[in-house]
Image (cartoon, rainbow, N blue to C red; front, side, top):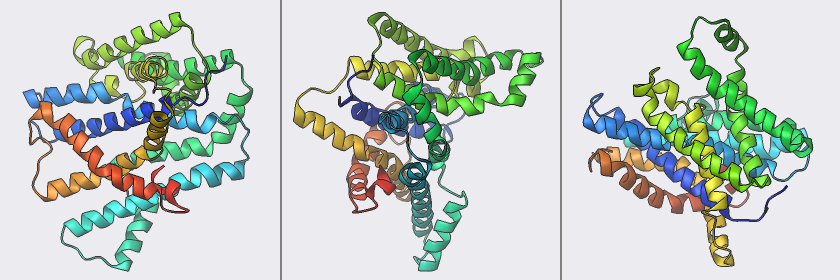
Length: 349
């Protein structure tokens, strides 16, 4: 059964996911400054575990917007409306960060330097937080096939693909880490199915959770699994073993379950008021909020240039406070970039 199409909750969820992604990056960068296993490092590790879901959530949001149209897009149209803008976004922001870093280090601004920065970005030399655009471009390249599948597949067929994604991208790699010499482990490594299904699963899952209405019992089970996912992510490394990378991975079962549970929670519990002005405001914010993610590291560079440490307020307070500061300072610029006539959606959408 198809759910509501015009609700404002996807924009609200997108804003929350971007803010959590800012906290994630702050927690990760803070761990580079804190002694390993110190009190601050442990706090930052917990923050990281609590916000790892934000990356899968962004892919879910991209999927729910791109696939919701239901039309079978032509290949050329997809390349022009999705893949090419994402690539231009990568090149623009990669070049901008190279230029800003150069200027903060005392360099001069020249046309040759700008052109060199753009070319370098096009060749893959981009700022660290822009990595998320690479798998997004890959998904957009196969989007016509995914959209044809989503528009014609039954609900059961979609659930089958989502189940395969969870199994091969999350559960089996976890099992293989504890059984490295098993035949199944060798086959999994050779087939590399988990690499194919990981982000594609999130892309389809976001559309599924928006397009279909789920019953109250499945909804309740998703929330339980989401809580279990948080516990697995945070406690898995110490209680079960295998290391943080195994449990904190973006396709790890705990992280995936948390993202799905929060997406469900926003649709059925935390949705935006039906008041038109509020829905319009959330929609407008959701339209440009990814620009906040793209822009906020400029403020991190500026703060670092002024000698402000990302742990200046202590590990507990620094992550949420600096995330909020970066978010609010970046929002006007994200809005401006998104409203540049003709190219706004290519820069900050």
